[in-house]
Amino acid sequence: MAASSTKSLLLSCLMISFLHQLQFQLPHVAATSLKKSDGKGSRGKTLSFTLYQHETINKTGYIVVDGVAGAGVSQTTTPFGTVYVFRDDLTVHADRASRVAGVAEGSSITTSLDGLQSLSLAKITVDHRGHRGSVSVLGGTYNTKPSDYPVVGGTGDFAYALGYVRSSPVDLRGRTVTYKMELHLYWPPYAHYAPVPQKPI
Ligand SMILES: *[C@@H]1O[C@H](CO)[C@@H](O)[C@H](O)[C@H]1NC(C)=O
Image (cartoon, rainbow, N blue to C red; front, side, top):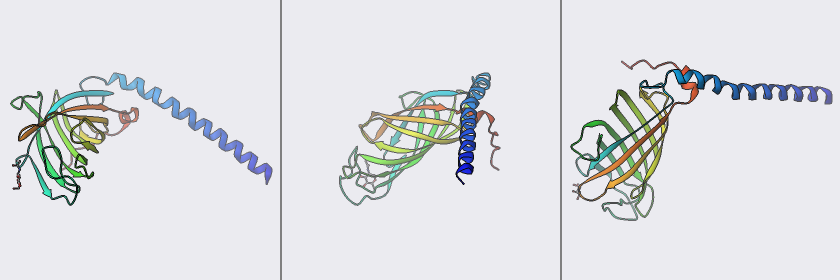
């Protein structure tokens, strides 16, 4: 009994050390082959760019469910439980008249009683510098400060992307508010071996 458990312990140790080696060797192989595909294609290792999101209350963004408690509706606050839905153009410069390079569609639910924080989800569709596809994000928003949203995935040229999107208020005055949106995308080594999804019919 004792002997056999020692043996199986030894075996599991060997197995773990083998898996450990495998785990640390694989990324090296992948990283080397990834380098070849760097550049314009979506299969590169990293990609960063900045767009500007413009939101006009009662035109591109609406409160669809009223909140129930806490702060009132103001330029920067909404009552706890408010559900907000938006579909905002993304331009290449802070100027609203600059070229539209995408759209951000999503929703925010107010999750703090001071009305300043919410949980946001969005699909960011981009056609910019030869990259086409969408990035989906999910995370917390602090209305008056920059917020980082983890990228949960993507489609098209952004399939298998990870990373984060940083959204910072540029101008919160007036009917249209502008946010700077910095996308920092990263493709983990295994994405290089993943199949390219076919377009859904
Ligand atoms: C947006 O529309 C709602 C509902 O009609 C209204 O109560 C609110 O004052 C409007 N907000 C602005 C900033 O126009």
